[in-house]
Length: 188
Image (cartoon, rainbow, N blue to C red; front, side, top):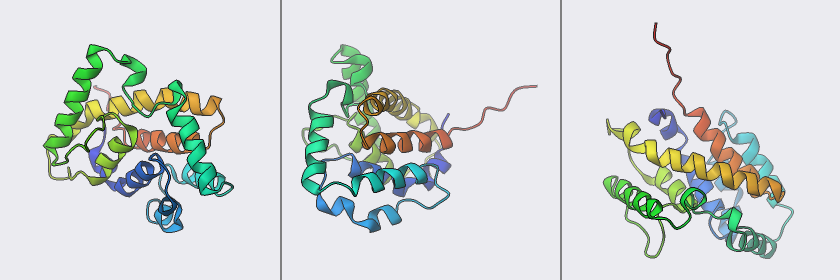
């Protein structure tokens, strides 16, 4: 189970993850974006810094080319988180419908032509959604976090194999989720 209060504390970082996992634009590399998204106590701080430093070695054109080569042309690096498990099966369609419903429950509309399991969109949802006063948030987020953890696991494996700087970003996202897991209290 996820600790939604702790997850809420990390909202600014989900905005950073969302922007960095979308097609790169010049504004995405403004240092203020990094500085306002993480503090040194954040579980992904070191990985975000490593990613940021690695990306500084590239021009924007190089980053855009790397992004397209990585996420658009490598099937094992897809940003669609349920694709790894279901590909284009019926179960995936059902999961996508449930994710869309979850977004709508929290007042967010789906962008035209985008699937709800697109990793930047999922991160954007965690950044923008307001769940602090919702007593059902932990239960409602179970599926979302499960899809994210499963999909990013497979994505991270592919990115590490390809020695992509995006691996630091995805690993940082996974570390953030890990820090938000509630500790199970053993029964006596």
